[in-house]
Length: 353
Image (cartoon, rainbow, N blue to C red; front, top):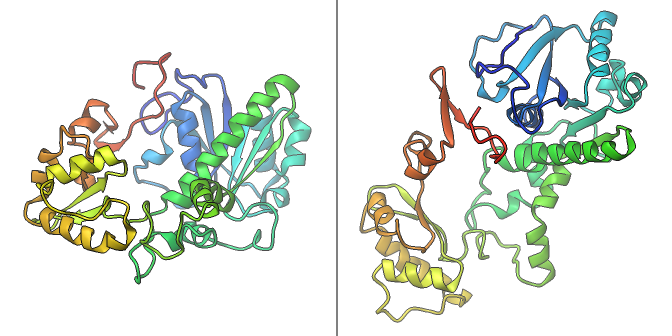
């Protein structure tokens, strides 16, 4: 068993969740991300991995800040070891398909019998119930069945996969964390634990509530890249520059749009009205023609001190050197490995861990 996390810190170090004890059943995607955030906030997290697998010699910032114990979960000794850990724990996080933990003798009823106050966090793609509950899937599948994937990309071209940020993390780990922390709050009043059914398909639907709102008011079109927030608006999209790099424009409000037009030197031209959707293609073409005359960093400097909501599109290699990211220490380096710093920040713990 490791006594230190991969960041060199003792698991459960100072933070608002100091004293919270979490068991993380080894899984992919949202579960380790959620466990990392809890550990970053001070929780003592023990990660249970299956014994007998190949040794892991890599460096994984995603797994920082917790102890790891290898157990044979199909043996009685392994099962008993997990239950013994849970007797002294507050939260269990697991990301297996429905029924797997029950077959291991570690289902909610088994665990509640040993610890009635346990918060049992279940993370799946499709949920614990429903026609697809037992089916395999990945981020791309969960966002495809919820409309999100349909809305991302250029018109008349294939939808663009937005990494695995929307399903796994936005709709997955964040929903799991909200559920677990909500259940912990209720336990303060009742003393009773409960099961949290966090499904990525549910989380992605919730993330899109603004889109459902716009649709209900006739303000969202089904066609890709035809709306204000999907790249259809010329004032909310990306543009290529003369050096082949890109800028991002988010000048939604009229005051920001005015500064965009001024910064591009177009204030004296007769341009279509900002919200005239029929003229968006022509307006986008004119704006693109100006951005294409200079390299990206020229435009980054031009708009650096202007509230036009124009920013450079940075590569991963460039992110750390950006003055704002550097000033907030948004990326840190531990043993030569660059990784995201713990977030959010707490006034009660001003010294970075």
